[in-house]
Image (cartoon, rainbow, N blue to C red; front, side, top):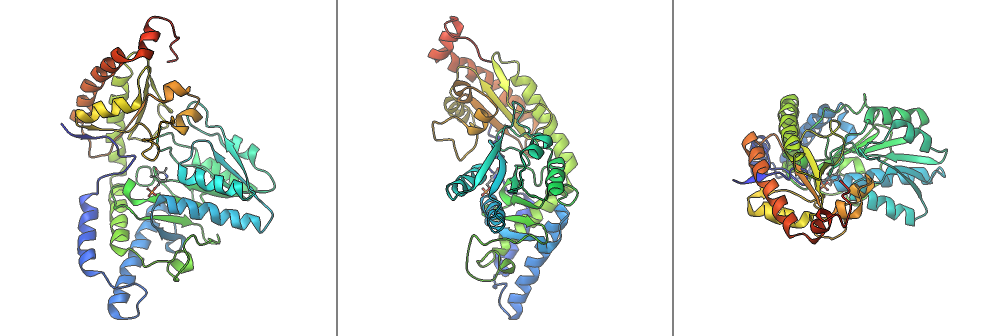
Length: 395
Ligand SMILES: *Cc1c(COP(=O)(O)O)cnc(C)c1O
C-alpha cells in the first residue's frame, strides 16, 4: 500500500485546481499589464482570483498581494514592518522560538542589522499565551510575528486574542498562516490580523504561488524590485494560471472545511491513540489544539531518519520534522523549543494527513509502525542501555 502522510511538506493538487489551471495555461497567456484585449482579459481573470481569495479570508481584494509562496510573503511582511519601525525608532520585534525558518532567518538577518528580537517561549504544548505577548510589548516594538499553526507539531495559537493585544497596543501583527489557511476557518478582520502569509501548495493548489494579506493602510516595502505589478509592491509578470489554481483550490477546501476537518480529526485521533500504545512513545504538541491532520511523535531510542527509511520501504511517506531541516543531523528547533532533550528530539516522526487519506491507510501504518519501532530498538545501543537500566528513560 502506498500512503502519503507528508501533507505538511506539500499536498497533492486537487482535481478542482487542475481543472481551473489547465485551460488557463492554454488560453490566458497574455500579460495582464498589456493594454490589448487579451491582456485585459488576463487582468480580469487575475482580479477575479484576487476577489475570490479575499472573500475566503474576510479581506478586501486590494489587501491581497500575490507572491511566489509562503516564504516570500513572510519575508515581505516582516521586512515591511521593520522598515516602518526604523523610521519611527521602533526596532524591537516579538516572535517565538518555533517559527518557520522563513520567519526565523528573516529575523536573524534583521538582528544583524541592529534590530532586537524577543523570542517568546512556546511551552511544552507549543502554545503562546496572549498575556505573554502583552508583557513583551515595549514602546519601541514595531511588530509581533507569531505563526498561526506550527508546521511540525500542529499546535494552534490563540490568534484572535494575540491580535487583540497587538491592536490595543498599536503594534503590527503578522501571522505565518501557511499551515492554517484552507484548513481552519479564518477571518482576518475578526481575528485582528494585520498581515498574513499563505501558500497554495499547502492546500492542494500549485507550488510556487502564495499571497500576503496586508490590511489597508499598511505600507509594504518591496522585496522584488521591477515593474508596477501588485500595485507597485511586488514586481514580476503575474503567474495567472497558478493564481487561478490557488483561488480554485482555496474555495474548494473551504467549501468542505468542516467535513474535511471532522474526517481528518477522526483519522488523526485514531492514529494518535494507536501510536500511544507503543511503550516510551510521546505525542508532541497539544492533544486537542492542533491541526486536524497533524500527528508528531517521539519514540525513545530511535533515530528519526532510520524510521523514515524503513517506513518508506513499506510505502509510507512521512517526515522527521520539517522538510527544510531533514537531511541535516541537527534535531528540530521546534522540538527543542518545546523542551525535548536532544536525544529524544532526534527520534521524532511527523505524519501529516489530508482529506484524501483513509482509515485503511491509518490502520496500515498502525500495523507496520510498531513492528519497525521494535526492530530498530532491538538494534539500537541506546535502547540497550535504557533496557539494562544504565540510562534513564526520558519518555
Ligand atoms: C511551507 C511553509 C512555509 C513556506 O511556504 P513556501 O510556499 O514553501 O515558501 C512557511 N511557513 C510555514 C509554516 C510552512 O509550513
